[in-house]
Length: 341
Ligand code: UFG
Image 1 (tube, rainbow, N blue to C red):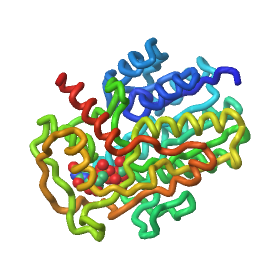
Image 2: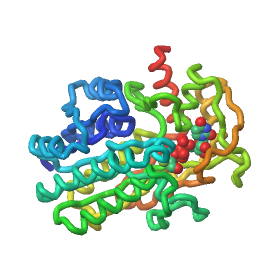
Image 3: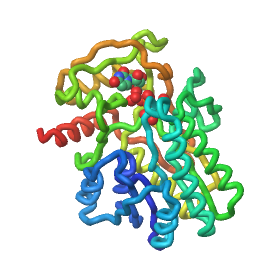
């Protein structure tokens, strides 16, 4: 196979940076494009350090159609992986138009440029949030989607549909939507990882920031859920495992191995873990004591969700490999490195 070129929109972010590393290490030419609206250059620098070379970087906003056209004129892309989007659930409820404008317009611009070019392999980063609350667990790709609880979640549902409809209408556009469960951890080099701005919304960055002393106390939201220990169950997927799934999906598209022109895959471990189990595992593997307390339920949280990852294993030849323990060690190593400890 001749060398393929992949555009990674939002490639300086948490997931994008890990995907860039795995793609480059698998032999792809990668072009990172980012407007740095929600991150600084730390992860971009880390990617270059891991790979031992300066990676092509384009500073641009995918909502700017002219900039998207210029990018497509400059590089002969074989595939695009689209990450560039806002992702804070609470903020999306307060500012829905900000989310609809940014998350939908950027994707429409990419697809339209792909259409004009005569086609492209498009990988969309979707989320398990599209499944909503369900008691039929684990969820398969055939599980029904539910009405989103936030504008953020709705943009994931809508972008899946925009991709599906574009694939149907425009010859040459092929698409895969990967539905991520809960991505956590950091690269084993501790050179790239999660960099939340302000107070973290997600559990693992809150844990690591509490352990390092940046936050006083972790609130465990809800202890009265109908689960074995009363806390919510999630499917925590290691960020490097998740990144490898993208390489498998891009390769499937570039090598013409898709069974349908639009495909969907769950990217999870198939293993439910409770909030308390995660907190206890973090303390144990890292030998640190975490200050935590129970707090009321967080509005919008589903009780439990985890993946049936069978289809990804069968079709992509991918499955999660790293244990939660290794992932939590990597997350802690990254936090310590950020703190210079
Ligand atoms: N949690 C706490 N304390 C915290 C943060 C989280 O107890 O400080 C709990 C939550 O209540 C939940 C679990 O930890 O039970 C996981 O919470 P996260 O915020 O880390 O992850 P979510 O499952 O809520 O979020 C995921 C994705 C989002 C997506 C959302 C939709 O990360 O992108 O699902 O439900 F929008």
